[in-house]
Image (cartoon, rainbow, N blue to C red; front, side, top):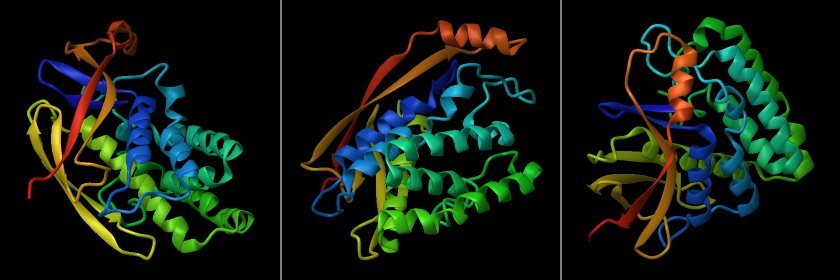
Length: 265
């Protein structure tokens, strides 16, 4: 679950719903300034399915015992995260081996600061089980040479497409985690500009509720719209996970539309 404090409520986005937005961004990506991902199919699949494993945990979400707030994805128990991420990687690989490779890199990259593209990224409890984390990362990385050979994949392309998956994931997380009702600026980097190694930084500026500008603009035309399913759960002091789950599953999901516009000038 992706949890944001929205005043009197908790805004909660389930990971598969966040991934649906990632897929929308991937499908629409590409402009005169920024290259479109290629081949598209494995990027679409990996964008849509990179967080499939979370669906198991989200059937019975819990509270953070220290704060009493709904437990967000960064605070999940790491051994459990490693187990369901292995299953996710295996399932995606069966559908599309290239997408499976990208999801494997994504899973390992969570514990490596997205391979230096977001050093601040870390799961709260990762250091408590560092041996398990390092074993998982090594397990994934040791499999890359065989995967790459089987796909006949150029290594430069692999890294560009890994970066693309991170861009779609992070931009979706921006819409899930930032105050888009009130407006909140941000920046997104590194963003692949081409497949020759050039990269850009995208400035994101609020234009009003659920409307932003992006510069450089990564989509066709001058405006694009996307949707996000979220739940707003009224805050209260829950005494158990079961009480929270009753309120969470009793809430109605709502679909929010966000508009992205080319920056003026």
